[in-house]
Image (cartoon, rainbow, N blue to C red; front, side):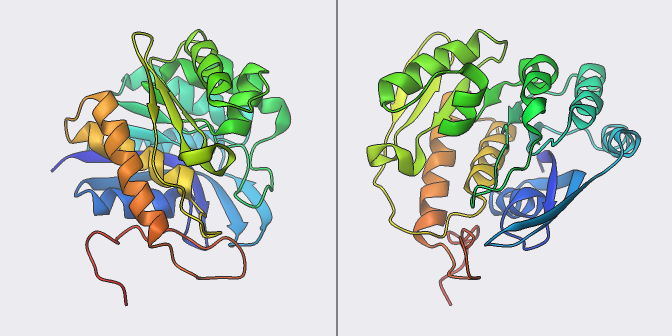
Length: 263
């Protein structure tokens, strides 16, 4: 069985973060493992508080995984502070894992911040160069590049600029902000527009976490990068179409919609 590690924050309401990652990995038939970097008190409507795990404990969790079960892919999500970022980057440099997918999580679906604004520079310097695939949404791509994005052409310019920062490939996610839910994938050699139908729903909590975990799972299963990205987008579209009307805010995706019929 292929193994995938998520390094991310914990969402106690179960729709995003490590919880969404592990559900996604299970749905893809891979063995999921987790390193928790922050404990987030959140639900579908708001983020109440964040408590970061110490850099020492983050490093020790990563050591515990790699000394025993070497992952076939690593997904990295929420890293709220420069200290968290440096702890993770040091271990990435030490273990040199294959198939690293980084979701530069900056905000929750409801707009609440999950990363200190001053941390973007540390993300770019310490973490981003390890990415085989980086998966920013429109706002995150704007924060990383300084480019104001209002069109697919802007997304393509941002993707090219992000590649210059050191990652091997990038998927700029259009989401609800771009007609037909267009995402732009760029690996330096080609630029692809991935398009699907727009699903009209407010229940999109954990979409970015789910997509990046699906990409990591597909890479672990042996798919080439571009195909892993396309398969992950199809999976997320299905999970959004069957999203669960749970909670008072943005409800979670249905991670197991392909495995179980709707109740």
